[in-house]
Every structure is written in C-alpha cells, then in structure tokens.
View 1 (cartoon, rainbow, N blue to C red):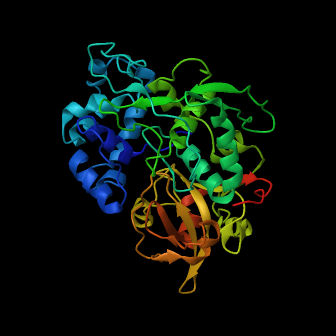
View 2 (view 1 turned 90 degrees about the vertical axis):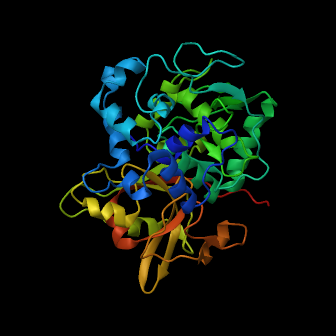
Length: 412
C-alpha cells in the first residue's frame, strides 16, 4: 500500500526554502493561504480537483508511479506527469525541492552533517543538522505532525499512544533519552508477534532540515518538542536497516509504502494488535460499532487508528470525498465518539495537524475528551481534530486497528 502524500508539507518545503523560520500552518485559513501561495489554488483543487483539472494529490501519485524509471532531475523533468506537477507550482524553480520526496531522483539528496557545499551541481534539498536532545517534558497527543514523508500511519500511531497511554509513552521516550544530549537509544519491538524484536541502536540527535534550517519531516506543534522528529528518524533507520549512518531522502520516502498503523504502534510500544476491516463486498462491515466497542465513556480506551479507502473505491463517489473533507489512503488517530442532534460521530485527529471543518458535524468543544486532555474539553475543528458522522465514517473508512496494552501506571 502507498499512503497518501501530504500536500501541506510539500507546500511548506517549497516556500521555506527561501524563508527562514517559516511557521507551519496552525489553522485551516493558514493552510488555504499556503496553498494559494505555493500552488495557485485552494484546498478543494489540491485535494479533490477542480473542473477538468485533477487533484494535485492525484498528480503526486502519478509522479510516484514513475518509480521504476528513477533517473536524474533533467530526465524526470521530461515526463508528462512531472511537467503537469511543475505547472501547478507557483514557481517552477521549486520543483527540485519537492521531486525527491515523491520519486527517486539520482542527483538530489541531503548534505552530510556539517557540509558547507552541495555534493552535486543540482540544488540541495537540505542537510542533516543537530536539533538537540529528545525532549519529554510536555509530551502531548497534539505534538506529532506529518511532514514530507507519506507516513501518516506512523504519525497517527504516535498521537494515539500519547492520547491513551501518555505516561507509558513518556516513560519510553525518557528511557530513550538517557543516552545523553547527542543521541538516544531506541529499543523497538517487532511489528507483529511473528517478527523478532530488533536489537537496540543509537540514534544521533539530528534530522534533515532545509537550506534555511526549517523542518522537512515530522515535527511537533510545540516548537520545543523534538521527539516526533527523532522517533521518525529512528523508525526510518530501523525499517530501512540503516542503524549506522544517515537515512537518505529515499529511505524517508520508502517508509510510505510499508506498514499499517497497528504495526507501527506495536513497534513503538509493544502490545497485542487488533484490527477490523470493512470488506470490499457489496455490503461492507460498518466500522462505527467497532470503534464504539473500544471506547470508555466516549473516549478510546486503547490506542486506536483508522484509515480511509483508496481513491476510486466504488463505495465512495468522488463528490463524497470532498464533502467528507477526508483524504483517501490516509490514516487518522481515533480519539472517541460523540453525539449531536440525534446522530453519532467519530472524533478523529488528522496527522497533517489541520483538517477542513466538516459542514454537517458538531464544532465547538468535545466535552468527553477532557478525560484524556488534562481536564479540558477538546476543541473541534482545530489542530487537526474534527468529528465525522457515523454513516460517512462507515462509507469512507476501510479499516480500524490499534493495540491492546496495559493501563498507564498511576501518577501525574
């Protein structure tokens, strides 16, 4: 399975190459402004298409389908799909910054740590830089946001672990950070019961940043938290079997073709995975009851994730994708359920960190979420959290999965 690309992150990378310290969007209005600047279009055109023009996300997938033809930048620029993508950018000169995140490009990569000059004559897309020790002081489920790797399944899993098992997850991060300021020690589990746990390994406290020292990949909504970026880097190293040396842009890109959320979550925290699929048969299995069964007082009792159907799935007409605000082939954290005006809803968190408000869903605050949010209601339609109706959830989602884990230890 190839998970969806994140056009928000790619737009941010395109612009941040010329703007130091450019902030990641923290509202849907900011996302719309980002798209206008980077792609000359609104979110509707980016995610769902406009008139005869395909969605930008569909163009990204077409470029990714060129993978068997991996070549240098000049050769790839001659491909029709690449030319179509270039035409959607506000500045064609941004294409080299984006292309290697989508398809292998033989002459684009990251500079090694401390390098002052580019390795090749083509534009560099970033370099490895120290970002400091892994911070564990205020670990929050809101922290992890997806960057330019199409690893929504990993980011959704990290958020779900921090939502339902915050003390256990904080302890795991604190143990990893004991190695000191320059590195962390990661001790992953096998992705399922039939895979041996890999040996622990050291991870340098550095990640790829762009030429102006901005984030490229996973980052935190809290600028003081480094753990999402470092855990993602460790995950890439383990999955690509590069526990020595720096992972490349190809390594980051390739983890988007691998695991499901429960497998990533098990690697991070262990436990027994569970899964429910909505078959592709004429009468799919509704997934809402499965979510409700895994809730306690309307909040998920175990780390729970869900992922959408593919674009073109006959159960979801194209118009319904836009109405739902959902992204096809995309994983979400499941926070719980709620009811409004006699209808049931699932409360989700989009790993993009933002999600367009859903017209027919409750807004304002989710009171039940206070149980896992420090006593404060969870704002809806903010920082990627939104509610989607039961019928829409059953229609658009193909699977729900998660981990059966012991309860958090007592403590603050």
